[in-house]
Amino acid sequence: MAFNLQASIEIAGVDAVMIVFDAKVDKQINQQVHLLREAIIQAQPVWLSDVVAAYHTLMVVYDIQRTTFEHVQHWLKAQLIELQQRQVTPKVAGIHEYFVCYEPEFALDIERVCHCTGLSAEEVSQRHSAETYHVYTIGFAPGFAYLGDVPNALQVARLDTPRTKVPAGSVAIANQQTAIYPRTSPGGWNIIGRVAGWTDRSGLKLQAGDQVRFTSVSKQRFLEIEANSQSNHIEERHDD
Amino acid sequence: MTNTKSYPALRIEQPGLLTTLQDWGRFGHLSQGITRGGPIDERAFLWANKLLGNAASAAQLEITLGGLSVTALSTSYWVVCGAPVKLTKNQQPIATWEVFRVNAGDQVRIDAPERGLRSYLAVAGGFFATPTFGSVATVMRDGLGGLRGNGKPLQSGDELDAGYYELTQPVPYRRPQHDLIPRISSTTELRIPIIPMAQYAQFELQAQQSLVKQSLQVTAKQDRMGVRLQGNQPIAWTRPQIISEPLPLGAIQIPPDGQPIVMLNDCQTLGGYPKIGVVSWSGRMALAQATAGTALRFEITSLEQAQAEIKQAYRFFNLNL
Image (cartoon, rainbow over all chains, first blue to last red; front, top):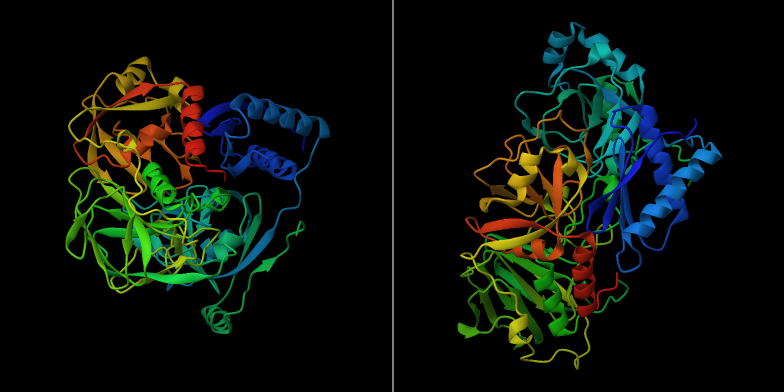
């Protein structure tokens, strides 16, 4: 993939800059964001405090005792030019596979989703688990990964009134995105299943730019996995 | 934290409305959605550690609106900085912003502040707990940090240890020069320096003017995540919704009702509202103690100025992180 997108570098905070790409929720643009993030982390300038990627933006927090906004801006511009010249392709990201039980006991909003999409419960789980999802970004809460894209036929708006308590490990959809609720928390997305063997810290293994796949399992299999309480979580990070 | 020597410091008898363990914060994990936490009034926190000769980032208790009572478990030196509160040791009033000695069994109580919101209780050596993601800072919404690492505030009966310290370090009755203690007033209009950023230029001229040309009020809708403000002229965003972006500390978000929200230490790492500016360090420190009804006015400053003020503070407090 050629790195040929325009980006601007702006003040984001007293000690932060924002690199802003084309304002779209788009996998290619998002991959550019993650390429730049990787390059910054690899280079590890002494003034780097933190770096966080969203959809089309990347925020870099710097140590103002060690550098200036102008220097960071120049340095980032040089990184962008270098990435463009090197014709970098995205690295094979981490792949995460989860076993999901889509049965009604866990699919709290399945009726609503079927009603809005005209699909049967069976079709919902088939379509949802047929895709390989891209982790656009992580935010909202620790380990809450925004995954996309949900196929058109399965896109449903958020709930009008958010739930006060969504169980940890719930698999949910909202418009073009899907996610796993990392911890029990309030939430307004449509719940269509539950990951087997999910723990409070499972979400923290996900990184922006990774890939996620879901495999449908029966309730019996779900319970077996939960009982074994061993990780069903296959990680293939090529950079570790 | 390699120093494993510690001593029993205190037991919480009454935690008050909200008492949390805070060190300087949790850094380098924004990309996992983990926010920084840490003291909301960084200046009061840094003063408390400085007065005791602690490391600048040593953990303290952040007490919101007083009501804390504790029992000392060892002889040590303590200090309380932040909002002006009635502080007592065994029912005898003692000074805040001044190092005092405690013996095992002493009862120390912090009443509700006359003005301001937050107090910091620091002990020689700093409180000691097992860090999660490199910090003991309590972030309730993330379920991280605190005494048990699960983000829970402190409760009656909790006992906290503190790190080992050199006996010669703390100096009793040590206090800042009088004019260096920040004044907190709820009656004078605060001047809050801000830097325009993010979507500022995409707001219409009228909205840009509403940002700085009106008096805004601090509302009761505030916590460690952010402070909602209220003004007569809402700041209108007339463009389509924006795509969620990383949310910097101090960002001024403009939700659909046009009433600004200033983001504080526990803010979520991404935000979907347009941002019109970011509050400077001294501005954030003023907001850290601003009770509901306090009037404020934003005034635009330069990035150079905003950075100079932090650098000066960090030099003064010897903060090298």
